[in-house]
Image (tube, rainbow, N blue to C red):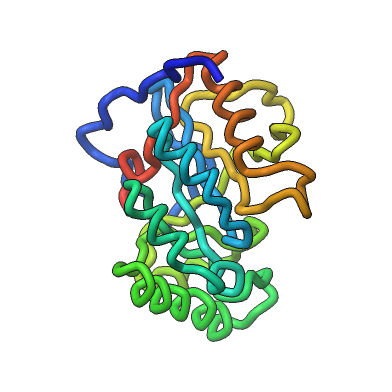
Length: 216
């Protein structure tokens, strides 16, 4: 990786407030920044935490209880580095296949779990598979969620994927990755981070805290 990495500018004076929970695919900003987000919680790689700490790179985690439950201590350490942890449901279902009551159970129960394990019920939520309907929005609001976050770019250990016609990172891109490792990827979260950070640096983009830009 190039050293030093591009530094994020000072955060805006006001966060963007999203009407009716969003959803937000990209953050509306002209700042030369992208946002790194990681889902589920299966892989708990200490080297990834060390990279975030040493390079001062922020990440926003969206946790599924069934993936994260084996070691919430890992995510407490992630939070101590200044990162935020948000809701990705208890069991990672495709929410529109559930009733309103079923969706509400998935979201509200995870709110309570994260409050217990990490000291705060989050205000942001990402629906599994990016799938949602009107009941999802209604249930999330009832559970205390303020912003529903999706993504515009996806990063893996061996590649970065864009939705056509996009071929490069853009200011405001929300990058989705996962807490995964060699078994699924053939690579590590450190490999993924090097790839996306290197690409961002080549394009003059820094990684900023999502929570500094979106009210949540």
